[in-house]
Length: 80
Image (cartoon, rainbow, N blue to C red):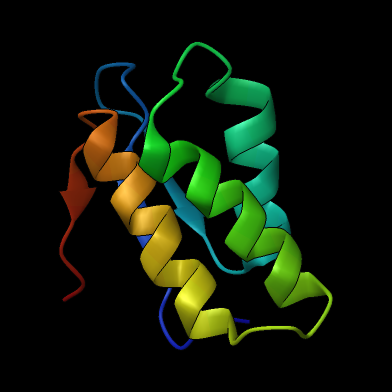
């Protein structure tokens, strides 16, 4: 589990999604982000896999996922 979830708009008006760990992040990246092909996207996949294998911290994976969302123009919601 990440220290805080990443909450973002999915692109469907009014639909919000929360991601809590590297496994969920990979599901988003694999299932929803196939149309994106940027460096942050590919890095997030690699870092999330490394996190699942305990080769890097979960917080590194969280940061990489946020970078991928930003690269894709996805609006990240601030935590209250």
